[in-house]
Structure formats: structure tokens, C-alpha cells
Length: 326
Image (cartoon, rainbow, N blue to C red; front, side, top):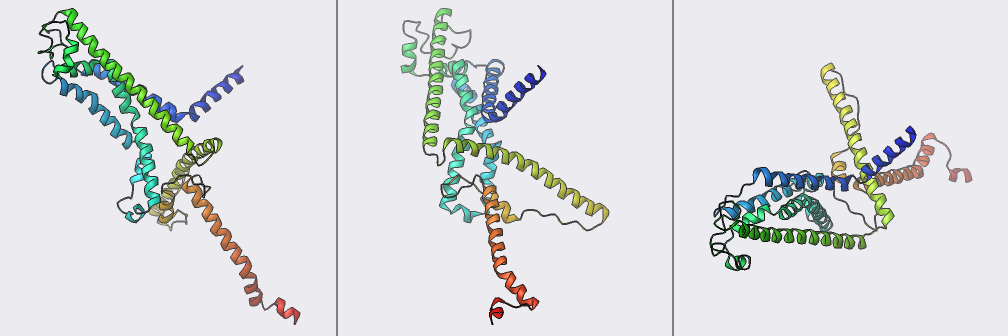
């Protein structure tokens, strides 16, 4: 019984680890939706004057802008993309690297848009910001159908509609606010539908243009996840070993032992952007670096195997094959 429970727990844990990116986006969307509800109930308070529109638009779009910029800020790929760009300007001239950079930037932007779009969508579905804002948006063509068959005070003085001190009757005021809320919810659902359609269409286009098959793409994603996990672990271990060696050399006044670390050129090579190519069967820049290192080692070994025996034979004073035949 206990073994069966442990197997179920391991299955759930593996599912969570496998879908951690999707779950992360879902958690981010839920957190953003909760934050919007908190803002609309606790912080937002419609001024019911000429500031209605500006005040509401600030609450609708400024937090979305902040979340969008934070999406760039917390993304590791953003810093991998831009770090060193101002110094290594020669690399920017490469058309291949520039195209990869644009592709990665678009992917980062799509990920950063999750939180702001969630904020705007939930705010529109809630309707609080839209009601207050449009009551401060004085437009004859907008309010004419809304105020149809209602008091004359509805059209020229809509600022106080979100507040209880409006000159209209309670029923007319509620009808107008319900209409504005319906407008907001229709826009919200339309935005959500448009985003879903765009996401589906773009995903289909990207998958159709994929240079690899579905199973190889799944393997590629798994490899990248494992490589990132092991890279962080190995970096921590190597940094700890190097720090311990340097501190021991400093405090004990002894010579440091030799520790091999990657060269600056190697760091730059593995930090470059990489996208899968049909001509290069690599899964990352580290994979490419390792394969090239192995090819160089094999080439050097082959050269030594061809040249060194003849040299040693000559140095040892032994007879060559030509001497044997003579």
C-alpha cells in the first residue's frame, strides 16, 4: 500500500517537473488575476470627476506595462541575449547571429506578455476600470445609445455615474453601469479569444517549420532542461572548489594547486545564441563546443599516430623499413 502511494507521488512529481514551464505560466496568470482583484477592490477608487478616464487608464495599462517589463527583467534569456552586445559589436554584424537574436527576442516577448495580457483581460472582465473610465470619456456618439429613453441628465453629466451621488434614478444608473460592464466583458472575452487564436496559429506555423520531428523536438527540450540543471550544479561545485583553493592559498600562504577552468574564449563560445540546424546536429552551444573539442583531439591524435613513430624510430637509432629492405 505504501509502495503504491510512493509510486503515485513519483508520477505526480515527474509530471510537475515535466510541465514546470506550463505550470509556471499558469501560476503567474493566477497570481496576476488575484492581484488585479485586490487592486480593484482595495486600491481603486473612482474619483467621479474629469479625472475618471485618466485615472482608470492608469490602473488598466500601467500595471500591465510594469508586468511586461518585469517579464523581460526576470528572464535569464534576456540577459544571455544582451550581455556583452555593446563590446562584441563585430558579432552583431553577422546576419545569422542577428536572425537568431531576433528569434530569441520574439520568444522572450511572448513569455513576457502572459502577465500583462492576463491583467488587462481580468480587469476588462471585472468591468470596474472600464466603467469609471468610460464615464469620464465624454463622447456624444458613445453615450447616445446608452442614454436612450433615459433622463436628460445622463448624457451631459456622466462623471458621477460610478458614484452613488448621480442625479439619475437608481434604476437608470444601474442600467447604464450594466451596459458599460457588458461592453467591458465583451472586449475582455474578445481579447482572450484573439490571443488564443493567435497563440494556436503561431504554434502551428512554428511546428510546421520545425527542422526536427516531434520526438526529436521533445528530446531536445528534455536535453536542454537537463543540461541547464547540471550546468548550474557543476558551476556551483567548480566555483566552490576554486574559491576554496584561493582562500586556502591566501590564509595559509601556500601556492595554489592547478585547477582547470574554461578560457574566456570558451565562455564566449558557449554563451552564443543557438538554434537547431539541419546541417549541424547539435542541441546546444555546449554540445557543439564538446563535439568540436573531441574532433580537434581526434585530429591531433591521428596526426601524432602518423608522425611520432617515425620520429621515435629515428631517435632510437632503429632501422627504418627502407633500411630493412636494403
